[in-house]
Structure formats: C-alpha cells, structure tokens
Image 1 (cartoon, rainbow, N blue to C red):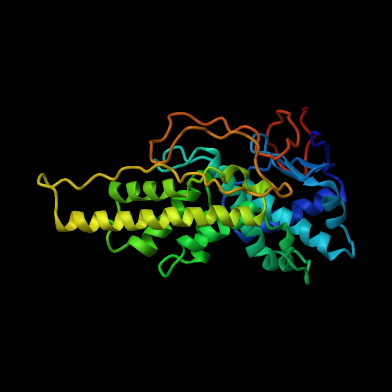
Image 2 (cartoon, rainbow, N blue to C red; image 1 turned 90 degrees about the vertical axis):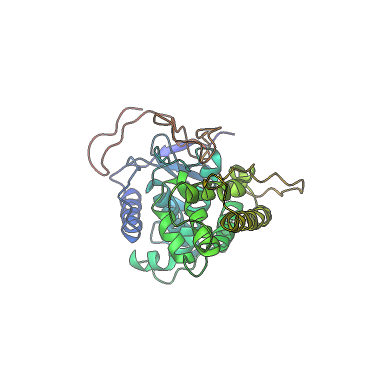
Length: 337
C-alpha cells in the first residue's frame, strides 16, 4: 500500500521544533547547501528526503511524539537521529557535473543513504546535547544494510594518512556522486601513496579503478536490507578492493622499473564493477532510501555530461508528488501543489 502523507503546519509546535533541530544539525557540519524546501510531512511509512522536490517526511509517531515533551527517551532518540539523517541528505548536492569520476548511478544514492545513517550515529551525542536533549542514547536497532556497508567501506579506506574522522568530514560535504571518489582517494593515500603519482590523470584513473571495485550491484537495495546483508556486501567489496590495490601496485612498480620505449606511462584501464555474489541476502524492514532513478548507465571516470541531470524522487515512498517551488522556511503561504 502506498505511503500517505499529511503536511505539518508551519505554525505548529512540531514544525518549529523540527526546524530548530534541523538548523542545529546544519550548524554542526556546515556545507553551504540546503535543499530542504521547508515542507514537512507526517507519513504513514518511514518517510524520507524527496530528492526531486526537497520535501522531508518523517514517520508520524516519531514526529509527533519524539519531538514533544514525552518521557519516551527512545522515541526522542529516534526522532533526533532522523533529523540528522534528513539534514545530511538535504545538505549536499547529488551531482558533480564537471568531475570525471562522479558516479551518476543509483550506487551513489545507496551509499549516500548509508553515509547519512553513519553521520547520524557518529554525531548523535554531540547533536542531542547541543539541541538540549541530554541523556539520550542512539538506538542501534536503526542499523541497516546501507549503514553497515558504508561503515565497513569507510574503515577499509581509512588509515594513517586519512583517518575515519577525515573521511566522514569529506563525505559530509558531498556531493553524493563523489562519495566513492572520496573513499578511493583515501585508499590511494593510505595504501598506494608510495607508487601512484601525487596528482594528474594517472591518479584520477587509479581512483576510477578503485571506484569500480566498490560498485557492488546491491548498493541500491541495502537500505531495505539487514545489517548482515550490508556486511556481506562490504566483505565482497573488500576482496575486490584488495585485489585491485595489489594489481595497481604491481603495475606501477613494474612500469617504474621498465618504462615504455616511447616514454609514455602505461594507461590505466577501468575495471568491471564487482560481481554480484550468489549468496542470498536476507530481507529486513525498510529504511530510508531514495526511490528515484539517478543517471543510470553513466560509469565512473567516463567523463562528465554536458547537462544537468534529472534527479527524480529520492524518498523511499513519495512524500508528496507536487511541484512546489523552493521557499524559505517559516514564512509565506504554502505554494499550490
């Protein structure tokens, strides 16, 4: 059954508290991007951030009870984590039009959802204290496949030169289409810095190869899957990534020892993305994943398109299918839908 949604009035206490928390979340990790159009909906399902319209939907019981003076601290914690998740998604662009390594497929939507969940867990204690909700504990039962896979992939990319905190800071700035490239740069810095050129086309092409090893075919579905499914995907990515790192290292070392006769550096060839495992992935309850198709079929490192993408609807179930224009929060008459 389709998810229903009811617009939350801007003069209501619930809306004002959500908007206050949203602004606290944005100040905690400023990005200069704000794609929320000011529309808030109480939804029958889990809600989400609508990548097309900029509207935000939150599950009605969490929105109504979690943001009120309720003694249910678990529900309050869930509400604050949801605000962090939505603010993270709304605080970054999707595309990077001029970046050759931008991934404009639904793999990026999957990891963007996973990163929003990682950020919610990572920043929860600081955020809740800044917001005046002291003593709350992050609910680990919100753990989903996309968060598990993203957490594991960040760990694989982290190291002595670029650590986990650095990666989270860089990923929080977006855009979503460059998440894989940011992680690939972490792998290069931490595991290949001694053999890969410091800058230029060779380094970009190496990152493109590493990105290919990360593009597991199940990224898009992981927000609807269990943490175990996410860990399984991350393990398969890890195997592909380790193999690719070894291949790149051997190639660059061999090239350095035996340069080509014409003096031209060996070209890096883009790989085939990691193949889907035949092992079954267990279903779990739905989580927050954009439903829209991204720019399907555009591979990383294949060159940027010459036009702006059609982004579509990014919520799990559409919050509202109207064509409202973006406006400032808290003032003015709601646009017709």
